[in-house]
Length: 126
Image (tube, rainbow, N blue to C red):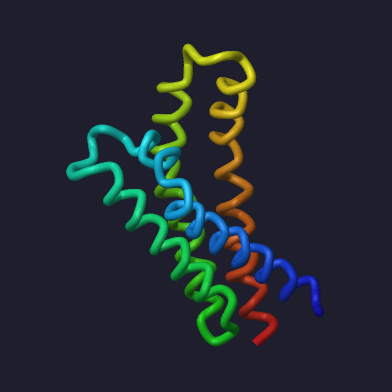
């Protein structure tokens, strides 16, 4: 397996795992849905879980990998407000939890770059 395919499969696996987690343990995701969004947090948790599953599946399939990877980059950028909300909400929690919430913020950058790299390298692999 080439490094390009391995990277795409890992990205796909990350998204599918995250999507499943939205349904297996939804409360943790409900808690970080920004309050400014309309509707119930659970609806946003379920919708985002379905989106992650769909994008992960798109990346797993070579014919849809490029569009899936581009969608993943957009998703990683779009969930940044939830990570900001989590960091804000957890500001009074014990130090290890605060650190974990804050660590999520810069993590979005390498995730976006990873998805864009999968998108770009799939061009060359095709």
